[in-house]
Image (cartoon, rainbow, N blue to C red):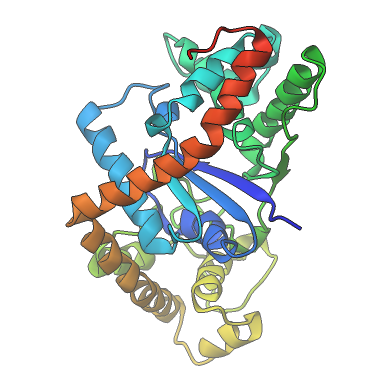
Length: 335
């Protein structure tokens, strides 16, 4: 039986933090042998809001380098930049022509984001269709997403089924959203009741970013919000959310059981010892990843070579699919 195909996209904006790695990237790396994976740096999605061009180019390359440093293996998976494969933008236009406007206007994220902007670009409304093209061009069976993106995968399913119905053919594979396990859900260190957020990673004390220096990591954990007690154990008590978050980070990074984690802090003198202990294992955990990242960023020719191979592999799958779409829709193809 052939492997299931998985499409995963991540925007080159914001700062990748420990929560992103433990909640998503770690699972991507672990699943490379089980499934056929396409990992896409979705730079076209980033420009739905204003971007500094120089910074966007840097962040795109930096994200690719970080994914490679984290363990994405180009011998096992396809890693590429979205704009390097023209089928994505073309496929989006073709799907636009079969997607009802009302479907896009009811997207929760569009409502939330547009409410915060004085002027709303068409790209913000339309990016779920680009997301659908990203997925459908590869006949992906699975799309790993958080709860906030599940509605967009459901829209992708609707668009695929509509296209299949209009052209009377089971042309697109209907993808399934895959919500990752909740075990590695990290909360903000400055607010343990809210999820650690990529958009807030620039706020000092909110998150540990993967490229933070050891002294910054230690500082961030020392300032982590806890409670007025001193008991170090896992708890469902909302008052202990800060301690629970710190223990959860320690558990996720070390791979230890909850009992072993609690045993490691059985003789701690208080929350200060807990914070330093968590900081130390995180610093040790990130050191080799940071070294691999820097080596890639110091060798841009090698990074470009890997991304060029990835784009070629992605195009080999998506361009024939796009050509079939055009033919079905009545376009005259160049000979």
